Length: 200
Image (cartoon, rainbow, N blue to C red; front, top):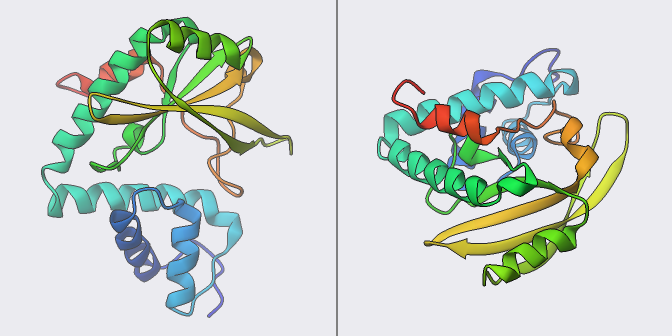
């Protein structure tokens, strides 16, 4: 069935269940899978809007069916803030499900760091006796630019972290959240602190 607007509530609800079962699932992929399962199609012009609606649905689901989820998210954000303070030399920004409030107990804390070279972050971690593993991640920008950046992963206090190391100039522009969505939301340590405040 052709769609000429935002996805239906049925698709949104199905995608919500998929994301709750797998917090790492890309939102647009969840919507596409749900639409395919229900015999509908997605109007890509509304992809960013649909992803935002999906985030709201996931948070609502967790509030109703997983009331302890807020404590989990608060703990992850608190650990993120500690790490951001520790890594303050690299202008850390929190991104992903811990920021949006859709994380679960298995979610990683993902921080974007900005440095003249990735080696400077590696040297910093090694000097602090923090072992890590290296990988890469691809990001896309609105101007069509694509880049692969290093990811340094480690576990601290039973919380897994991914440090994504960008160049210094990359702090000026966030990559897109997915190949069809809006810009990725990044939060400074001040913003994370506000989320942890009683009124946050």
